Each structure stands twice: as structure tokens, then as C-alpha cells.
Length: 226
Image (cartoon, rainbow, N blue to C red; front, top):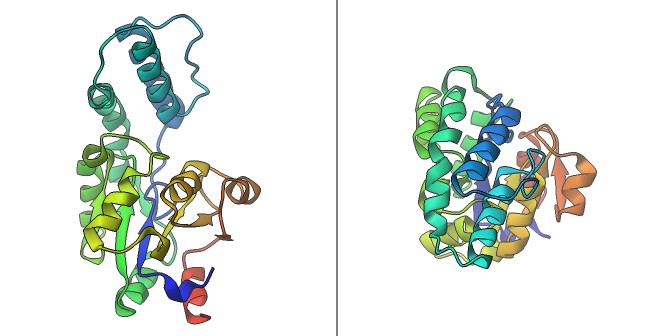
């Protein structure tokens, strides 16, 4: 992969651009309890060990397979407030990753389009970006509120591709999780893993990462070397 073909750099948010200290354990627990109760799911059908996107997907599949008419958007909307309850705490405790502003400034000066694709609530993302005065660096921010689906569904990257009129093979998605790498692969975009969040170097590579970085400043070196 030649980085000189990249025109759009898309970042995941939590664990990649910012340390948000989200309480994933209780987020998953509350989501599990809500979905199981509201939709009367069988015992042991879901697990608190599952990622939230998997719980939502399995819930929708179960309802459809049992003849229960369901709008997928409504399922995600149902849990939005549950997730937001935890995410909103990140506004006070979230901290930018080392080198964030330096790298964003570097990319902007190179004429790159810069975007965020995240499963987090839009209001929370906007508040954090404004708090640290980095909102102006981003040409577009895509959250679950716009896509109505969760990663690894590629819809968010496809929306970004359409917005910039740039094919996905000229887009790189940088994220700290297996799901981020799967999202890039599903959209036929480039996938760069970021170690320092939820997934290990090996896990990121196995999920499709073309390369793995450990500090945002490495992005400058990658583009300077091309």
C-alpha cells in the first residue's frame, strides 16, 4: 500500500484520537438488560461478553426470524440514551492522545481531507472536539446518529466516500479495534491499526490492518516517506 494514494484520512474516536475512559463493562451490561427485557429474548441468547454491535445485530436477527416486524433504526435508537449516559461522562474526563494536534495540522497542511467515524453519540463528540478546540480540523464527523448502524457496517465510510467524491481505495481508516479494521475491509478502504486502545497488534493485523502504529506522530513519518 502506497500512502501517496491516500486522499482522505478517517479516524476512529474512542481510543484512537482520545482516551475517553468509557465504562464499557457497564455499558454492555445495561444494553444486555434492556434488549433482553424489551424484546423478550430467550435466556442466554445474548451475552454481556458480546460487543454492543453484536448484541444489536443478534436482536434484529432474532426478531426477524420470529416474524416480529422491526425497524433496525428503532433498535439502535432504543439504546442510544443508554450509551449516551456513559459517553457523556467522557466530556469531562476524556483526554487527547499524544501528538493529536500536531498530526491533524500536518495532514491539513498536506491538503488531506480529515474525518471521524465513530459509534459514539454526536452531541458527545461535538462537545469534546469543541472543548479541545480541534473541531475545525475535521471536514466531516459521522456518528451512529447519522448512519443508524454500528461499525463494522461500512455505511459510515461509504457516506464519507460519497461526501468527498473519493473512492474508498483512496481512504484510510485508522482505529484501535478489530471492528475498525473490519469496517475498513468491508468498505474496501485501507486499514491502519492503532495500538493503545482495545485491541492488540496481532488482533489488529489479523482483522486486516495493513500496518500498525503506536503513536499518532508515526502518521507523519508514513506520509513523509512516501
